Image (cartoon, rainbow, N blue to C red; front, side, top):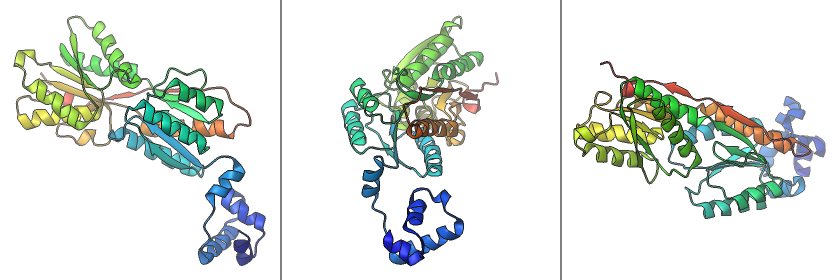
Length: 333
């Protein structure tokens, strides 16, 4: 840093401001320092900076799964918001392995990360205790009961699922199948509860549940194949899938085998409204979770805690989903 200061003919403190709070340095001065850094090949010692400040600039998202496009879209919104605060986003996922996730969280605490956004739904109480006791800025995303100690940003999945199944009922469906992954995952459990609530309010409508090993397109194809092999009278006339990947896989199975027409034989609706839902073989109806609002809101809650001199009161942000109706669930007859 001293070499950069001499080369740019500025004070050492000005270089420090440029590296830590560049908004406090004039554009002309920034250009001089940037040129000196480039000419000298200066590389900042981030480990030393972190040791001095006591915390890194890394914000970590602990995701439920990485094969769901929804999390990629949310992470993109987080990354853009983090960049505005000169933070860096990292993403980890234990894919439902609670012990592996516990290892990740212990490592993040040891590294004194800037903050943690938990979106897996599998974090154990001992790790939540660790995050709380070490004052690690932590936000629960979507799926945790421990709301007394941590701020949270969530989507009302119960209401979203209820809207989805109510829509199928309005389209004339009376035999509805819920296709979902691990029911112990809070988000999926909430969607199942919402679906069941809609069924309870609909006379003469029944619902079966098909559990899947995961929530991928492959799992959806497998579920669709199983339904296609049934006798026509034993098939559902409406399917609510726990996410869009499952729904798209189900439709792909039906299109490939040619035994089921969507939506004439079976209406299908998914959840999340990922970017390619509208471009699937049959444009997919879905429940939209606002990705940008969701991602940016979680980052804002973390930075709010990190910048506070003392622990701030917890805040809970609940985002309402939106039903997006397309061809896959719209019956004309």
